[in-house]
Length: 70
Image (cartoon, rainbow, N blue to C red):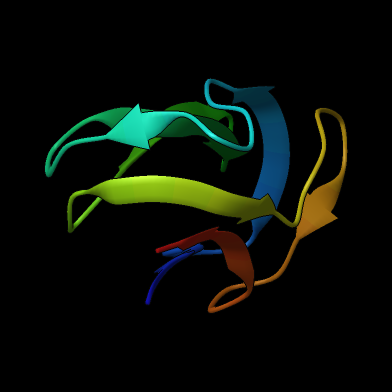
């Protein structure tokens, strides 16, 4: 089990995966807006998306778990 966490606080602009999707190490999974810049968040491990814990438009804090992989 692996988690994808927010590298910094910001607003979720786009969630690029859904539950059940397969992701590979390095795939973009979320786009965050932080300090008026778009920040792509990438998977650091391969796996299947078990849970998406954020939605488009939501604010997330740094270190928040956004996606759970299995």
